[in-house]
Image (cartoon, rainbow, N blue to C red; front, side, top):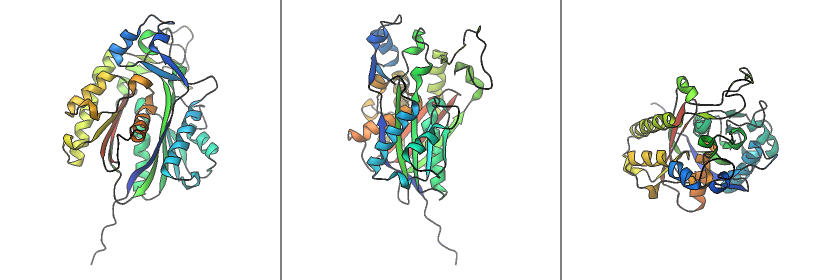
Length: 330
């Protein structure tokens, strides 16, 4: 007689946490330093304000504070952590990783800790990696963080990009569970589109001082990115639903990357989901890249909107291009 199949091991979100810098930069504040207005920004993006890291406040600082809050919410001691994965495109240092820096502050030397760079999809990619570790049985408790200080790489004289980005971090504690948790994750990338949304500076590439794009700056072809993002997110929504054999109306909450309200609305329309069931923070946070999905998730949990047992769809699109989704039972 054959042995009964081992039960599937899920990665369940045991706790969430987030952190936003105290400084708030409103659209009216931006209008004082660049040719723009609150009406212009809000109409095109849905953004009203964003948080900006203080001088000396790093991506690692934000990540650490979010992590502590997630651990507290999960009722988990840092000593229980078996894995730390940080999604970020604005690390404190070239090396060591921001995950290693957070690990040191938590005092949990020994477990693996590393960063994932998938731009705005960073948290979804990091979540997927951690889920695979738990599903394989090699990890019982994982800390996954999305943290960014994007305002450090915006050109404050470029009104089409400087109005979009903010700083912040969100974190989740994942625990192995045989009942419920992350049902599936789906990841994609298309490096051929890199110059539509990129930072043309790197250690190996360097930059030439006389080039227009010199410096650590975000360069974006906004309309092209918008069109590609809507199409890619439409596709990944369908892929996620089909993979899990569920109807779109079974999803309780859509928690999307907070880049642009119009992109969020387009995805909700694809799901035939009223905006009342979509978590929106872009108006107050701006685009915090890999920090946006866990920030929105934590706010939704702490406000009481998201409840245990509900079905959540998380999705994001970012430079690379990268895009991804996670379907989970909270």
